Image (tube, rainbow over all chains, first blue to last red; front, side, top):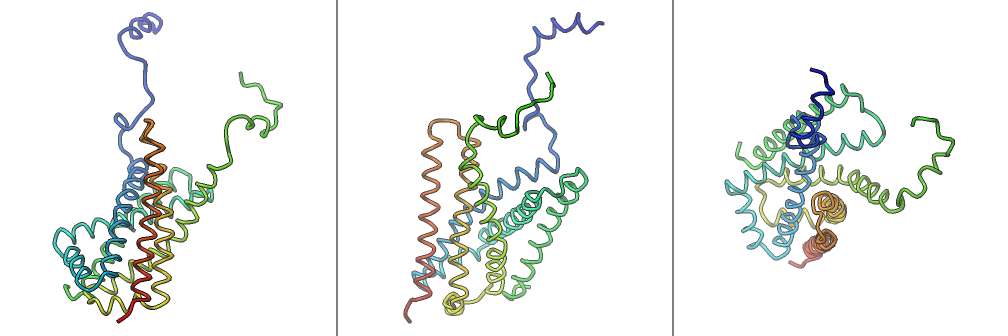
Length: 141
Length: 129
């Protein structure tokens, strides 16, 4: 069929096409890391509040400090801290990637995927290394 | 449609909107990011080194000028970076009239928390016992 004969009919049946948005676009490394950088940023904001609570507890004395430390040392606390550690390293590595981009380097598609997977690998490795070091110093390993 | 323009780049840019304050937000976000790379790595390394250490050991560490100074610099850079970052997130997703109020509230919270953290650090650094 000729396009001119279809066009008026489809125009009536279908709504106007939309530009690709997050709900219909297949997730890719680039888009996932972009939103991950934002999500980890928001998560780390909550972590920053935790840092202030922790410092305030330490300033208040040994008992409040011990209470916060017990909370961090509990299983839920440790899982939360593991999440914060990974969020921190992902945001750090992603942020460094952004700083490199700001110097107008690494914009070729190949470079973007190499740096993207490097961010993922480095974040996982640094999280594992940090926890292995912490657990061995703390005497749990 | 695609005829070459005889207007200068400046002539085409003029009148399109402000380029006065947006770039400073962008730049300070980067400056604080660069500052946070060594500061956060130092903080995480210090936390790892103090895993399982008790209160006196931790306090003795935070009483050294290096650690106290580092912690205060970390709090300043961290909350400045957080305020700028959360502002962008809110501006992207909050479209109602509440946007301005939410941005102000978040920024005041960030600077308030930074001050609380700095005072806590100073109390430990200059505390008695």
